[in-house]
Image (cartoon, rainbow, N blue to C red; front, side, top):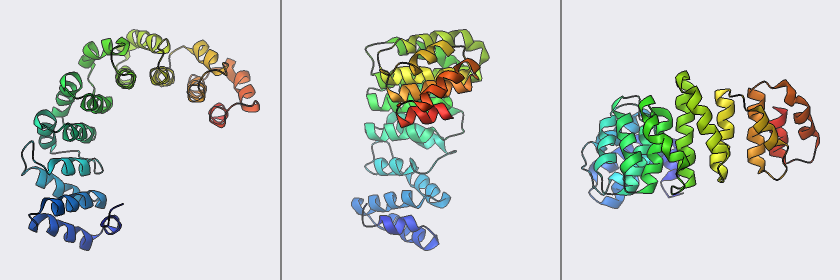
Length: 268
């Protein structure tokens, strides 16, 4: 924690005015950067709006952009998304683009979805693509299924990216019942994957979508060789599916020497 953090975290009018004046009056980049990061810690609407107004005066590639967008990650932005979208599209610094994608998750404006989709597909930096895909969990559109679907089975991609892509598809299926049959294909593919995160996303998706995969969940729960996190997720999905046939199994889990995580999930 830097030297200004305790003051910034206190918040209030006097603290806000102090850092606002530093940002407005100082020409030294290091001082302005410190003021920007402090305003991010204030976490008040006026601090967020001040950061946005400062961002509106910069150009893509400006050395203050990294601090500005990073600070906005701590302050959800629901409007003025065009400023952040321009950074996602045009800033040369991949850290700025990555954080811009994260900031846009909280936007309520329509222009965000297309910008995030383009970044998730085409940005040259894998961290930017991951951040944009993660934000599509909120902003994904049914039309995005066509290009996201092939990603979950592409072994050349990072497993974490494929897991997030699968999560986007699951959330789209929640909102679009017409995707039910496709959702089963995605879950099947994920369950067969060798990566833990992809499998975990599939197991969680079973409960989210209410798919009749009770047997698959039971097999995971009953296998002590499976990771505890995966078994815990399978317990929760069985509970969401209201599978009365799993009650005896879950009671055994609760009363056995399973990990605390699995036992607690079975109790729920």
